[in-house]
Length: 497
Ligand code: ADP
Image (cartoon, rainbow, N blue to C red):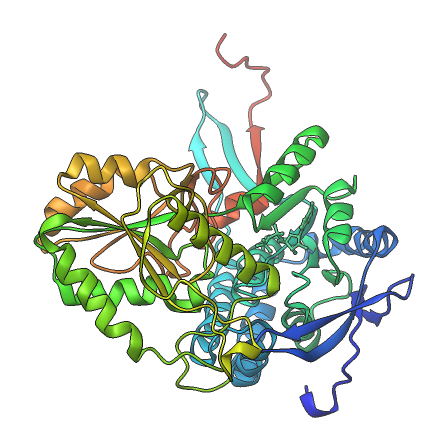
């Protein structure tokens, strides 16, 4: 794909064809570092466009389901190779479209390469099982079957990685999909679907509808969609889960987090400081796994906080397209206003700003949505800033003196996505991890940094029990079919004969 010749006006992708929305409304995607600069114009799809896309996916489903999974897998290996060739170009565009620093954006694309390779391999597994029957000469087995048409609704903060975590397992399992990327990162959605097109996935297996919540809701409401897979805010997730329940539709949710890092008295303080900087300020704190609470033992608090304050001025904050940049802008004006408001509320409630606390008001950073890396001290566990997701570069410090107190605070939120503990006694830390309400845990590493071959997901209001990544993700995108085979000419009654 030659990006220089790609027109700035993009289309939906339905049944293997690029096409405009039926009602020709469009929206623009803007660069958060330079908010007057548009990266492209996209169709603002309506219910009618979603209907066309679902029809295409429904029509394509029987043949795709009947395609042997190893053959489906071969296309995924081609997909991995294709994405590899696009890695730098996509990372540059990602930095421009949603503000993730270029080096992090390379990692975002790398996740999709790994997921494509992994799911290609799953094409040769997709294991079911066989088990002994109660009766001799009777066979019992269970196989995985695809669900049908899946609606995939994704956020902007991992605009390649998160779609790959959903699209690839859904499609390798034999489902067909309608994909709606976030309205803040439609260009990345476009690139992802171009990749499927380039390597020859059959028409209708993946369909793209660009747009906002109108298109998202139409997917959730469509009777021919069997499953919605959603990553985004807890409020939207609650709405989607409710609608899906009303329709008896399957639904897999990845939602918010309020992730804690416990730094204990025997921690390697320098390692903890590095982990906190990366966990709290990587992607400017705009990760569902971002470290947003530092729960620190009072004996090491001074060393940890002073170490953080010494390092923050050395962070490269700037244009995400520049290779050296470590912290970029927030996604949009609403995001920066929310962070500002939450910090102001915390200060009113008694929190102390140790650094940052404001947006950048001087050139050149005042052009974009840049918020200063912020550390708040004197935070009480009950404050909004310690309870609710910020999605910005803000770390709240809570000081404790006992492990029970640390664990009660870490678990005392409605979320349960990721948690970390720093201690040089790994056996002790394992005991801590066992007590933490979180789906992802780290010992001597930050709360961010998931790998594609282990389960990803949270407990409590961070999700609804499903896991992404690893081979377990296939449980989301398949349904079990049990097959019982009688090989004797006799009627035999289970539990009775
Ligand atoms: P975030 O705050 O992380 O952007 P949202 O939950 O608002 O999260 O959006 C995540 C994705 O969900 C986006 O693709 C958005 O267009 C879509 N979306 C928002 N509201 C709805 C809804 N009610 N139904 C379906 N999709 C929605």
